[in-house]
Length: 482
Ligand SMILES: Cc1cc2nc3c(=O)[nH]c(=O)nc-3n(C[C@H](O)[C@H](O)[C@H](O)COP(=O)(O)OP(=O)(O)OC[C@H]3O[C@@H](n4cnc5c(N)ncnc54)[C@H](O)[C@@H]3O)c2cc1C
Ligand SMILES: *[C@@H]1O[C@H](CO)[C@@H](O)[C@H](O)[C@H]1NC(C)=O
Ligand SMILES: *[C@@H]1O[C@H](CO)[C@@H](O)[C@H](O)[C@H]1NC(C)=O
Ligand SMILES: *[C@@H]1O[C@H](CO)[C@@H](O)[C@H](O)[C@H]1NC(C)=O
Ligand SMILES: *[C@@H]1O[C@H](CO)[C@@H](O)[C@H](O)[C@H]1NC(C)=O
Ligand SMILES: *[C@@H]1O[C@H](CO)[C@@H](O)[C@H](O)[C@H]1NC(C)=O
Ligand SMILES: *[C@@H]1O[C@H](CO)[C@@H](O)[C@H](O)[C@H]1NC(C)=O
Ligand SMILES: *[C@@H]1O[C@H](CO)[C@@H](O)[C@H](O)[C@H]1NC(C)=O
Image (cartoon, rainbow, N blue to C red; front, side, top):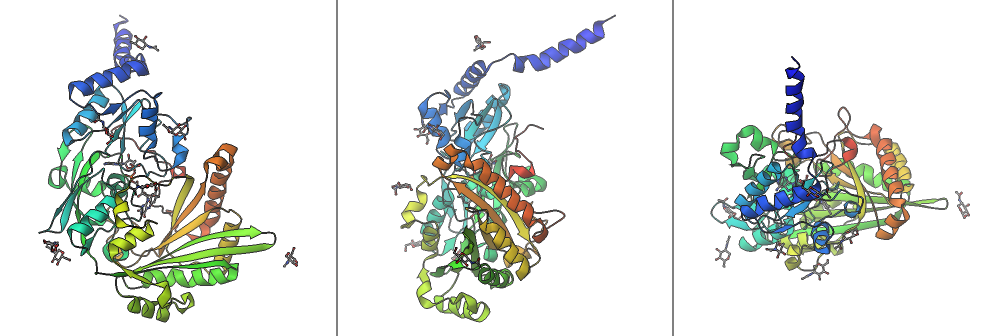
């Protein structure tokens, strides 16, 4: 007569015990034998070994997530074929190990390298980086582990510099995560996001099944392009449309250091209405920081420009629309699009675009979108406040152009018509600062500044960019666990 509770108890035990009773080392050995019987051999296990730690650290871009206190994976798996990804997923599931997917490791919140769902393994796609360009259609299949720099270099070279890829500015980002989160860059006002140029994709789901655009269905194909990676499945490869660029483009960076708050506010006030309305061929962003020294507040403001055309035309456009910038011939460099991407990345030669090693630091980022111009008076308040949260800085990216012509329902990226610009809030620090514990204060400062900005930015909802991932807004990413 008490068989019912017993049955329930038995069921409960069966469901829960196999996972709970096993310790990490037995799960690791189960995972290892599952993978090795399926011929997946490039693995790293022992979290105490320095080769494991090195492999883990190698692509963690934000050093905050290398800290010993951050949960470490049980294993790092480096598949080198599509079927090895399938096997890796199935073996993790069979052994009760959660999955993190890693391409370039540039997640602002370390989401590709740590997890709160323990134990977990990283499926790292760094060995899947081939790029096949089809000259007859100007499209290319790009494996997720290819870096954006490798992609730029390959497409430029194979198209004799006539084509480019519309994506972000940092060459060490991975195609996998970057495109899954949108991918905004110098060409986006002309051609949209990287995600807007995706024409097909190969996706491996939590059951280990492979889908292309047709077989995954239009909803899934919509979902994987722009809302952020890590949850829908493993993108094995993207098929991207390459976009035409002229033989030479014009690049400039104008430093306006030591400006007073009113002077800088005046420039910004003009910029916010001019930059989003420039011709599509013009990208003009600004980077702003401030400092307070005694009773003196100074603002440093710099403008980065890229124009898909000659410097004569670039200067004519700026002189008529934004004369305050005083853009002159000597500020402008005419070079190939590939060289402009190289130089914006701080590199000397385009061959270095395929160099995966990178400068890293500790940082926190947040983001906003602005739909209505901010008044001069409010901009002065913003700059005064910013100067007090040094070393924080802002990067303002102009939208408009193609960004505003693509429908907000096209992709899970709704920041289209009506957006003037995005704001990225950043604060970075060194290993020494980290040891002194000041990092926590910096993060709090940035959060305070973000709160302060609420009246001046988009509302209901307050928008943010998935690629500038900010877990303060919630949304830790899980693959296949709902
Ligand atoms: C220095 C720097 C500069 C940046 N500049 C720009 C910029 O100019 N424009 C812009 O738009 N963004 C920029 N970003 C943000 C960048 O686009 C995101 O951080 C992006 O997620 C990085 O992709 P990743 O593959 O390198 O990162 P990862 O950390 O490997 O992945 C990011 C997320 O995607 C998931 N993921 C990774 N690979 C796959 C895959 N194959 N399939 C499914 N999910 C996957 C991960 O699990 C994780 O959740 C920059 C970031 C940094 C650090
Ligand atoms: C882990 O579990 C295995 C098998 O269940 C057992 O042999 C081993 O002693 C356990 N290790 C620890 C540290 O508990
Ligand atoms: C595994 O992949 C890494 C990264 O590419 C490589 O350095 C290493 O040699 C590979 N190891 C094996 C055993 O193939
Ligand atoms: C990885 O980074 C952490 C934190 O900076 C450090 O303690 C560890 O020694 C690094 N591992 C290797 C192999 O460099
Ligand atoms: C491919 O790009 C080249 C260079 O811009 C262009 O001349 C050609 O017409 C394009 N081909 C297709 C099929 O779009
Ligand atoms: C690039 O130039 C080479 C050699 O001149 C030629 O064979 C190739 O077809 C060209 N590719 C494109 C995309 O124009
Ligand atoms: C700012 O400080 C300087 C030097 O301490 C002083 O001479 C000056 O009067 C101060 N200016 C204002 C506006 O307070
Ligand atoms: C790659 O970049 C690193 C760090 O930026 C640098 O030290 C190294 O020399 C570069 N390697 C090549 C081959 O350029």
